Image (cartoon, rainbow, N blue to C red; front, side, top):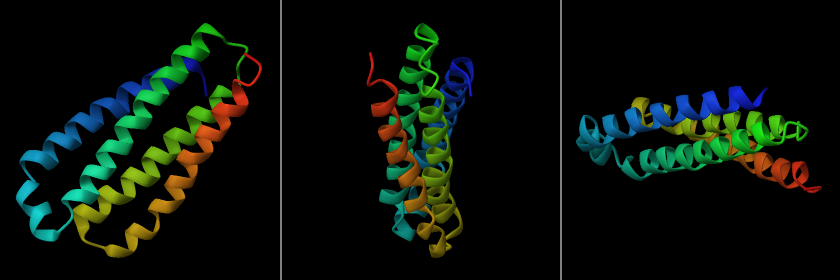
Amino acid sequence: MTARLLLQLAGLFGALGVAIGAFGAHALHDTLVRAGRLDTFETAVRYQFYHTLALLAVGTLWAARPELRALGTTGALWAGGIVVFSGSLYALCFTGITKLGAVAPIGGLLLLGGWISLLLAVREL
């Protein structure tokens, strides 16, 4: 993982968040409401964006302070958390397979791990 890759992932996840969010708000809105999954979908988009912005900040910090290599772990955990947490919730919304909701806590642990990793990575600033 590099600072450049973290910034590229922030760009990718940001673009996907806008596209997926717009698709859900417009093309899928009625379907999500009927299925009772609008809140789940909005949670997935919201957490994707929170952590996309966090990736952007960490990538920027790492680019400015390349000696903080542990920020790569932070970014990897957040990227994995976005894919697993938001991805499993999107899949649940799109497929209706409720067992996919059981995967979301794993993604949540990755996101949490990223925040703890950040705490440790910057302790000597």
